[in-house]
Structures are given as C-alpha cells and as structure tokens.
Length: 262
Image (cartoon, rainbow, N blue to C red; front, side, top):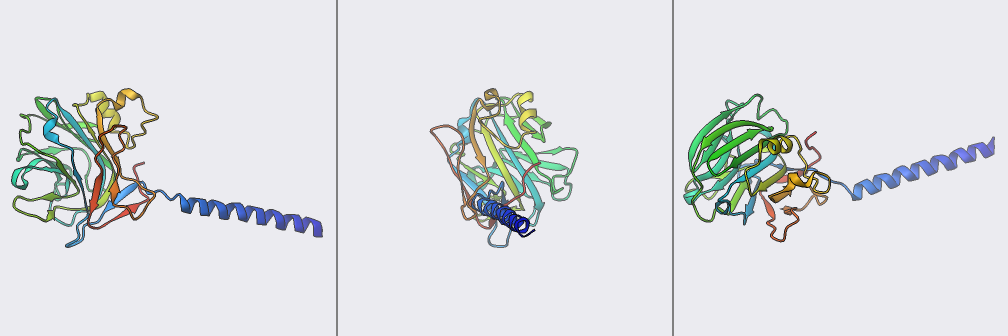
C-alpha cells in the first residue's frame, strides 16, 4: 500500500513538472497574431509605411488588408490612405460610420461609394482589396468585387507614404479618422490579380509562403504580417523574400492581441 502511494506521488510530481515546463515554454514563446490599434485623444494609434512608391506601379497593382474595426470614435474610419499632394486622398478607403454596409473609395480625391452584404463594424475580420489594372480601379470585400470604375493612373510623384488606420486631412499635420481595432496582414502585388487569385487571397488570412502554391505568390512585392513574439515592439518587418524590404512602424497607442481571423 505504501509503495503504491509512493508511486502515485512520484507520478503526480512528474505530471505537474511536465505541466509546469509546458507553461514556462508557452510563456517564453507567446505569440500575438494581430496588432491592436487604439484610438485615444491626442495619441491615436495607426501604422505608417514609408518607401513603397505607388506611382511606380504603372502596369497595375493590388493592395489587400485583413482588419477588424471594433469601435469608430473619430469620424469615418480610414482603413488605408496614400496621401497625395497637400495631404489629399491619392488613394484611400474609408468605412461609413452611419451606413456600415458601405465603404468610401477615393482615387485622386474623386469619391465612389460601394455597398456589400454585411457590416464592416460587426467586430469580425474582413479582407479589403483594391486593384488597378491599367484601365479600371476595382475594390473587393471578402473576395467579392464591389466596385469597377475606369480611372487613369495616379500621376503624382513620390506616393511613398502609406497609412493604415488613419488619414491626414488636407492642411493637417495630425492623424484623423482613426479607429480601435485589429490589423492582421497587409499585402501589395505589382499587378492586378485575376478573379481567381482575388477569391483565393480573400479567403486566406495568412501568407504562409512555404505552403501555398508558388503561383499564388507571383508578383507579391510586400507582405507585412502584424504578429509578434515581442509585446513591446512597434516595428513590423516586411516578410517578402526580396532584397528590397520596407518595414512598417506603429505610431501612437497600440497593443498586441491574441485574436486573429478564424
């Protein structure tokens, strides 16, 4: 009886040791799959990328962002913006805070509205894609085309500044139209993707370069995966396997989140 009790004690100690080591190991390798931008007065959180010149994509491009808006506190939430001259909207997409099944697309400061089935402020992750194929600008929500309009190229030089989660109004030096929510991934291709590829990327939130068909990765110029094992960092590396990389920087209030697309 005593021997059996001793065996049980040893067994329990062994189990507790394994559990403890597992907890310690998990603590060392904690991984946050998304970045949380926090909209606070005078400390608005947003992402800034300097060095991707949209004016060089004369043959077309595609931009995709996976994001979630939890709370819009400051006008129409700006999902992304390439500021033009005098902080105008060379290319920008905003969510309508009133009619939350609509987005507002700006191309050279010309406005278009798009509608889709759903609610952009529903607390769920969404894929937003915008492309230009040399003739038409296209916008997609969750892999479905919602806008196609004929537009000439963005002729402004040095469109090298991209903002996520904020915009700069004309004449202003302060970020505006921020939101509290999550950013999971941003991708930029040097071509307008086909409908097949739009559908694929609109349903795949993570860019696992070593798993997906290489054909899906063709012309992928930049990809920023907003995840980290360092809770204090505000730098997001460009994960494309290219020699020319452009890192992103988080400005203002932010944290790292354990939430990600399902």
